[in-house]
Length: 514
Ligand code: BG6
Image 1 (cartoon, rainbow, N blue to C red):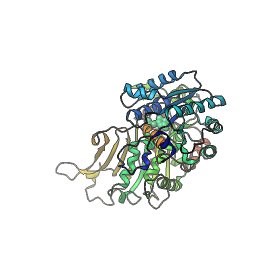
Image 2: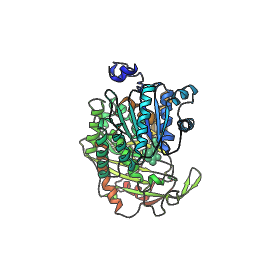
Image 3: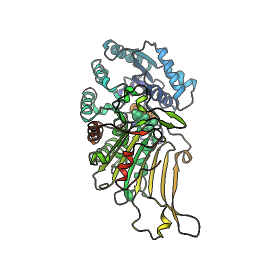
Image 4: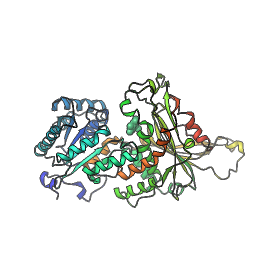
């Protein structure tokens, strides 16, 4: 029995040989959020913590500590959390759950350079440990701009908070962007690992917490049907699309100078590529899973020449959902000469026996036609069609589409005979939809990931090697764009700049129209 168990009577579920379908409940602990006044904390983190409490997955003695500059008392912060929960939580508001949660809410006022504030934080945590039996287990959630990481880490180190007490744990949770190129990511990793050992670092890529993303592993490795065709013998190309209809008004502070490739391709889309292209892991233990992702990312490079295999764009004014919307340069918070891309597309070659010769096309953009994320495996055409050519004019390539969101599910597209006397063949779809196949609603990605941090379950968090490899893949495109003019304009509500269409057309392919 560990010290936390001895001190609190809590039983570590990891020790039990148990039915894996039973939910695992976090042990006594405190979560400290830096950046509680930010959007992410309000819209995702606080609501997710409440949802976990509501689902009975947090211990009754759980504590939440906010750290920020505002002149708030515990009650003020508690009110902020309550408002965020009421507005954004997934599960219904229940007074008794809130009452229990709010008993453990504390606030520490301070700036990141204020040593006294960090001493105050240490005192608050010690008090909570004693009063609420949170057991010396602390998670520090850095929902702050990356430039503030080194300072906060330094403070956590000098107050001794980063050091775990015997039998307890101290973990750090880091939000992206994790660096802005390979060099800065390496520097940041060195700073983080100087304070926290890699096993205590949880880097958030919230796409890995999505149900549909985890289902890629189930689809590939729990079935016999797909594996035989999941390779270059049958697959012509893979398209990974993350399209958003929203614009960037108000997000200039974060997004200007960052752009679509750093914001989304470096992390979410390359992780989707890794899960789609990797080999079967020996087991789903975190080490084995990461080893396969690392292998496939090491084998991936940008296809060249970059002027033909990549595209970037910036949205201009247009119509979206029946509304007139402005272009990026008129958005609040952006410089009028900004060259930040809001659309990016790249071609990745995965040089393994399974994938050699199969291009992986990755694209993402804001203010596109609609919000959709999907992974589409486009299959080769049948080598021979014993039909009259006019009968197969409407037959496309077979496709397996993993619909990550919205309308989560899987679509299989194949040719079918059109009813009638002729042998005409046309594309049809076979659909699996989460909504109709399962009664329960999927938890939010942040619920799953925060719980995993508290349980010390690292599978869904990219390790530093994955982060660095992803930058290594992307860096040549960033360098190339940096020295080659401006992004191509595209109209809001469309599907990106002409250069993106041209990028596929010149290989004889087309983007799917989701
Ligand atoms: C974030 C990006 O990581 O993902 C945002 O920084 C983007 O720019 C968001 O809007 C999209 O997340 P989701 O879960 O809505 O697809």
